[in-house]
Image (cartoon, rainbow, N blue to C red; front, side, top):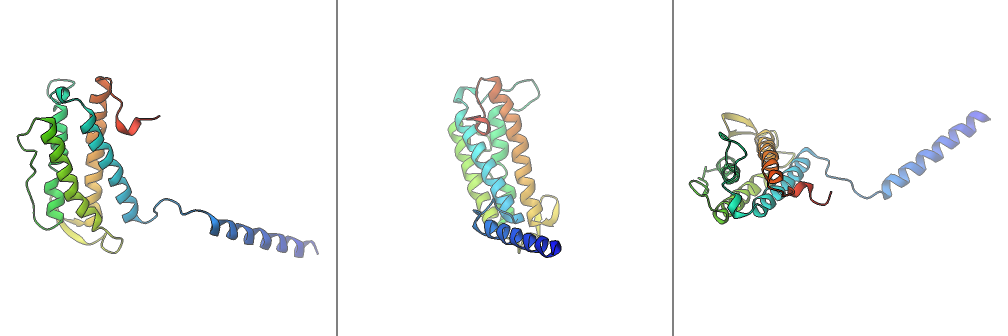
Length: 176
């Protein structure tokens, strides 16, 4: 008898759990392509906000000799347009080359992210492992795009130090 009660209790608990899970709101994206797109959207937002937040007169700031200025870091990421445009079919030069003014660099950065948006928008789970020409040869599409996100995060992390030294809170830390 106890065995029948235990089985009935487990069945009831399982049914209740399934019912609760069915009512739970959808969680964060769970496919590789969706996760990478979400990571890209976050770094894009943080990077543009950081570039906009740093005052114009600090674009020439560098924390030590031998390190790029804040403006050069912005230009460096704006140059990722070459990688994204190559993924999209035809390599294009960045308009950041030789620019030092904040307005020019922010515009070039946004232009670069517009080009990269096309690359990330085209990513699906179905084509993620498709071999494409990127970087130093052929690689899976998702790997090339992952590299863009990783590199942008590395550069953003360094720029966060530049901002903190100048008394500014990086966008990813605002409200904490």
